[in-house]
Image 1 (cartoon, rainbow, N blue to C red):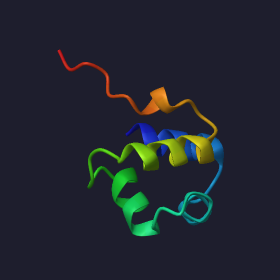
Image 2 (cartoon, rainbow, N blue to C red):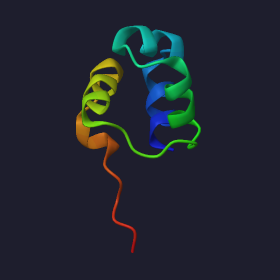
Image 3 (cartoon, rainbow, N blue to C red):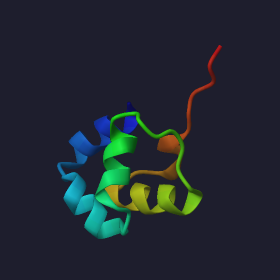
Length: 64
C-alpha cells in the first residue's frame, strides 16, 4: 500500500502522524493496513502535509 511506503520514507510513527494531523491512531492503522479504503479530502490533505508529499501521491492508478 502506498501509505505504508510513505510512512517508512518519512521515518514517522503512526502516533506522530496522529498527533500532527488530529486523525485518530486507529483510523491511520486501518488505512495503513488496507482495512479502510479511501480518505476524506480534508484528512488526505492533512496526511500529505504530515508526510511531506503532494496530495496526488494518494491517487489510485487506473485499474486496467
